[in-house]
Image (cartoon, rainbow, N blue to C red; front, side):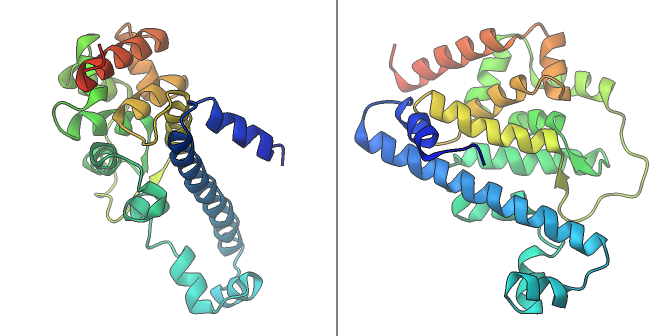
Length: 238
């Protein structure tokens, strides 16, 4: 792989010079790398299952029992939602976690089979009043009602039976959560909040959320500037 230790060191150091902040940022990056490794393995386990391989065979390939392989990689647990309580997501703020959970609810309400960027956008609004992302969006002219209207104009409700259980995240939604980490590191933060998620959503240009924000006249630079202004107001660092 092209990722080197020097690149990872630079990513952490670019976020700030304080040694403790760098320790926190390094821990955040480590969690994300472990998460990506899990997703990599899950991808090929799912592929093996689609190819007709048994859990016994997959367990042997992993060096674990059939039961352990099935419990770890079985389809009953969604990797992202199920992971909200483990260490991968320990640095997500409560409202950021809530936004991810509410994104799945938004997809379920619309009978959609995957969670897309549009659902993450709606999840931010459903995460509770006063979160930094929606405060910034409101200031830029995109309130919850407008966001829901623009999303529904682009993505029709599903026609199948109601979706039950955990819903998979689309590749664009997964990319958004990965970019949220990058934004946190760039801003020198040792947590992932709603502000990082909304900036990541705007960066995924081919996602519905970015298209909705573009139609509302919200560009990435304007959004980032508004997020920073709002952040300074909240923290009192005027």
